[in-house]
Amino acid sequence: MMTAIETRAPILDEARLTRGEAAVSVRGLTRSFGGPAILTDLDLELEAGSFTVLLGRSGSGKSTLLRTLAGLDPAPAGTVSVPKERAVVFQEPRLLPWKRVWRNVALGLRQGDTRAQASAALAELGLSHRLDAWPLTLSGGEAQRVALARALVRRPKLMLLDEPFAALDALTRMRMQALVAQLWQQHDLTVLLVTHDVDEALLLGDRAVVLIDGQIGADIPINLDRPRRHGDPDFIRLRQQLLATLGVDETTG
Amino acid sequence: MASAAVSAARPQDRAISLNVSAFLAQAHRFTVPLLILIVWQALDSFHLINSRLMPSPVMVAESFWQLLVTGQLLGNLWASLIRVGLGLGIGVLLGTGFGLFAGLSRLGEDTVDSTLQMVRTLPHLALIPLFILWFGIGETPKIALIALGAMFPIYLNLFAGIRSVDRKIIEAASTLDLTHAEIIWNVVLPGALPQFLVGLRYSVGIAWLTLVVAEQVNANSGIGYLVMNARDFLETDVIFVGLIIYALLGLATDYMVRVIEQRALAWRPSFIGTQSSGNRANRRAA
Image 1: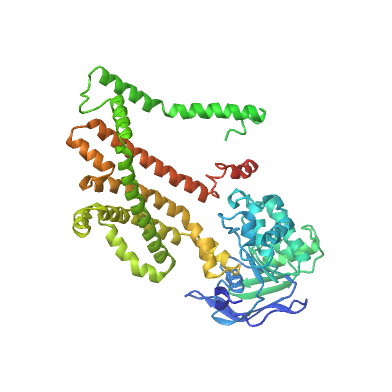
Image 2: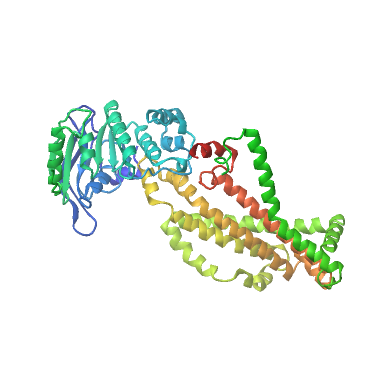
């Protein structure tokens, strides 16, 4: 079905969900908002079922790239091919405060028992007891889990996460990171996570793409065993490599 | 509220103590008005004020009873209620129509907003002479005047409410494969509702104000007619009855709008817990 969003972002072909094939394919993407280009002639492919982390300093164009893939920004130059079944989680939960939790999750579902589907998704995120709560009574972590449930209930092939843990406290963030890793492993998902947190990238991703001035500055595979630990020597080595790419000179004692 | 302080008490004790303290708090609020009535009555009983100009509370109560049993009060009250009801209804409908048109489309805004903003600066009560010439002296000019006055707060608040809905929420909803109409119905209109209800409250106030003026200019029924007749016969007690009726009507309609708010905006933190259905959520959050 065509929606207003999809007419703005060209979708060339439906991605097939076999590991090894490209779920997302971006070619020659250039994007500017009047001034100098935010993204210049960018190429990127995401393998189906992969977990890619997009890193970059503020203003490097990482959010713009995610918004383009989400169909929220038009792509004036270049081709963008993404699966139609995609879901976005933003930094803020962005729930509708006037709809109870399960109705927020069920919004836009059209087939079958939408309450049952919503409640299954909420149960998976440990929120069965909050089905009928008003969003404004939720804690920050709970609200963000509802946002995740709202994304998950649509059975997306591509999950776009725009700094979804940035506004959470440290302990909640750790729990949410574990939860996202678990969801990615249990569902057949391609994940693109935008973050500026190098540790988060190394905990979750199997590939780190660093955007520098609107182009891919580094593309680093993360071949670490899961679950990952901060103390692992390989973890520390990759961490220094990523930080150096981002231009942070960390002097370790 | 008080749940934390008395958590050790048994539930039924707590309910009783809450009821008693709630009753005392309510009673306390009526102390000053009651004192004023007593002093007023005393001043009159000792002939310290001219009861022809300032009737005592007892005199006002007596004339209220008289008007009630003769049926004058209810008949005139009904006439006034019909005027306000019709005028307010038409005004709210028009204000909502224009507000939706201008709020939801750029074309609508360009078409009606500047015109309505210009007309808005005109005090609508100044149109009474014109309306009498246009519509005569029957019900039409009164209802039209009330409708005109009530329309603007609705229009302005609905328009502003629609335009101030959080863009980020609309954006998030647009990633859920909703149609344009579904976004308007599920996101934009509920988001504008609080501001619309603010407008409704203003409209109700303006409707009563307009009624008072319209009935005093020219009427042969209604509370205003009762008051103007009383002036001709120096019946200050009847005038007081009219004033009290106006005040009660204003209070009653304001209360109605607040009940609507409580039901329609149950999701707001300030309303959660004021209804039985919201109590559970509130307790869990505490």
